[in-house]
Amino acid sequence: MSAEQQAGQGTGLTVIVLAAGGGTRMKSKTMKVLHPIAGRTMIGHVLTAAQALDPRRVVAVVGHQREAVSAHISASFPDVVLAVQEEQLGTGHAVRMAVEAAGASAGTVLVAYGDTPLLSGESLRAFAAEHEAAERAVSILSGIVDDPFGYGRVLRNAEGDVEAIVEEKDASAEQREVREINSGILAFDAGFLTTALPRIGNDNAKGEYYLTDTIAIAREDGLTVGAYPVDDVMQTEGVNDRVQLARMGAELNRRIVERWMREGVTVMDPATTWIDADVVLAGDVTILPGTQLLGATVVGEDAVVGPDTTLKDCEIGPRARVVRTHGELAVIGAEANVGPFSYLRPGTTLGTGGKIGGFVETKNAVIGDGAKVPHLSYVGDAEIGEGTNIGAGTIFANYDGVNKHRTKVGRHARTSSNNTFVAPVEIGDGAATGAGTVVRQDVPPGALAVSAGPQRNIEKWALHKRAGTAQARAAEDALGARRDDDGGVAES
Ligand code: UD1
Ligand code: CA
Image (cartoon, rainbow, N blue to C red; front, side, top):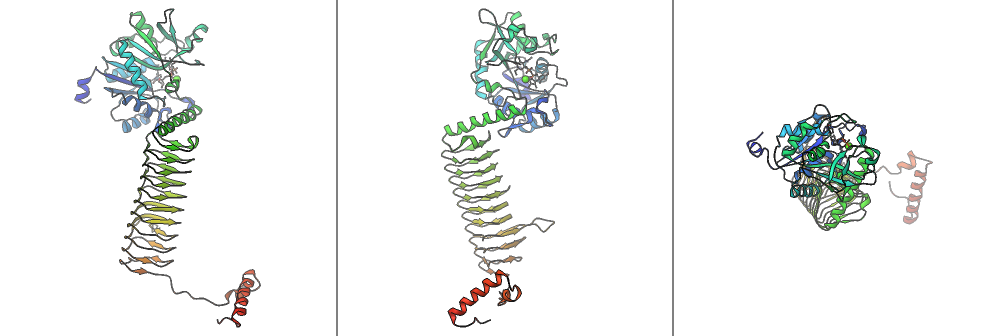
């Protein structure tokens, strides 16, 4: 623990995120909270919401598959303190493990779960503020739902004061009728929580230490307890199986897409547009149907992306146009044109006003301002200077079967169709190549490289070698027509 953490120990806001449970209904090798939604893990969403409150500390309680969960948290949220719960003895026990690991004995403690991907920092902040303003021992973020089955019910007395939470399995038939449920998000006065945790028993239907028993304990001690129904119940909804995973994923996407539209992005078809949580879009971006913007993709002002385009961790410049493209870790300059049917692999950089056209695959390729690779090409491990045009059907042969090599093409070069550049090779500034050239040696600046031999025509070959075929007849017809025109047989 750092000196700073030590100094602040016991004060401020602590957020505890519970993620020790197994999540067996996912039927997955992957731990439930590690399943992604909108480009982040479920627990990643919750920890991001927690960090938005700028808390003194965030503690994650891990148990099931704790190596994988801990590794993910340490990598993505290095400030989060990890607490281990060896056996899942209940939410009360889990919080006890967290408090013991972090030593939160004063201030406010917020408890949330790691499987509620829609939870927002604003909702958490508002709840914490309400709790602190009311100076309560415990506050419950509750929800009024149509089907409360499975949830802990919030029990109120005749005056409407909260008395306790009773779990589904322990509830009487009458208590089960209550539609105000415990979302699972609770706020505590840390001093009260520290004294209450050891007093929680496990004499209940599940034989677990219920964190929710702290409500009745507070009431016994004559302390104040309150429940705040949340408007947006989905924010506190957990994901237990893959049907819910898809449903929550679609809902989160709907919210993200709607937010961007309100920020000034045109989305032609929200239903077929997927935008990850960490994507950033500028004003007047247009997204056409069937487009997925994933990971840390950034799109500049007035750019048009789609239709049917997937971009992961890409940077698209202002006013660029990207049509029917699959891209990953690529940087596309302002006003550049990409697609249709382009495949941008990691390390692709296209300059301002450049072009990567139809059926072009690029990888580790730096293509300069105004440079163009318009048609049917593979550009791997290459550098192409500004203003250069690469002819249709050019292959940058970067792989000799053992090693990868680089090709460099200079500025304002004009290479012709159906070329092969056998790397390592360099084509100078202002150089040119003939059609079908296989470039094996460097081409000096301004030179024209040709490698194909002179063309030789073997006259009437089809008439002799393909006699009786449609090919031969077509040739005969054409030669006959020429004879009529010229009044003689064409010379051979
Ligand atoms: C819990 C609440 C219930 C609430 C519901 C909301 C209790 C006793 N009950 O019930 O009032 O309505 O959530 O969804 O708190 N966990 C651990 N360690 C454990 C047990 C659980 O880390 O030993 C974690 C789980 O991974 C999960 C969360 O705590 O993220 C909730 O546990 P779960 O067993 O699903 O509680 P519920 O029965 O749903
Ligand atoms: Ca649950």
